Image 1 (cartoon, rainbow, N blue to C red):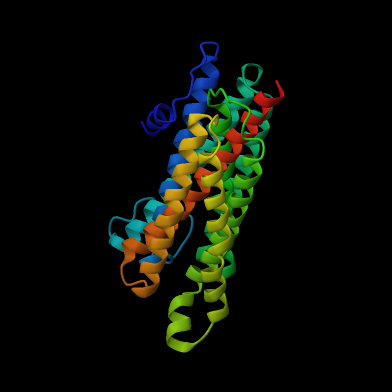
Image 2 (tube, rainbow, N blue to C red):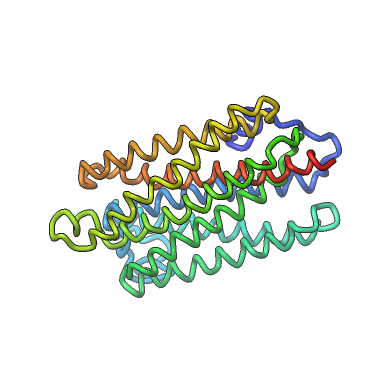
Length: 307
């Protein structure tokens, strides 16, 4: 459903020559991308609820697939986080298998990219296990989120690259702006992960510890915000820009302001409202996704300018 909403809202042109294999693989990729956003949101909720060690063992939980006797909110969050991650892993295996089985009907790069995605989700699973066995060590928790975002970027790029699209050849320079914005948002997300994994806000406000990390995250908002604003203004001033790119630019602008608002509210409420904290991290992932989608389409759009 989400895939159909996206394609209809961006008014992509459907190619009659698209193979059935491409359609099936593309739908699977979008399911993985959506499940990954849900996974990151549940992971954020797990951290906010102090549920990261609610299951003391790994990969099982209290030695069971479903720990019914120990089930409470914290255990459920950690257990469901692992369940979603496992489903994504299975879908990644299916994606790699389908991509190689139907490789003659698919773009040449797709089988290899599916293997990259599979490798990332396997590494992500290993990091997930280490977060438990190493008792939520902050560097492992940060790497865990960083890898999840890289997996999300990879899967989303594949999905957008497979969407039927007809460009206008006007986004040649815009692609570099959006790419810069995506890199800056990714780096800011890593700093945010450091802030979250070390409870920096509490440490700084209560004990004056790790304030440099907190200030880095606050000041780090400026470069990606300015880059997104440049992207939005430039896109609006490009009359011939395709509708999908125009929509993605506006979406990025809206998400960056929403993200800043959530960050300010989270700061002043000192993480006391858990849904705000979870929303802050989830919107950050969606902002990164919108910039990645714009970048992939803009690079495709540039090919029309060369035609």
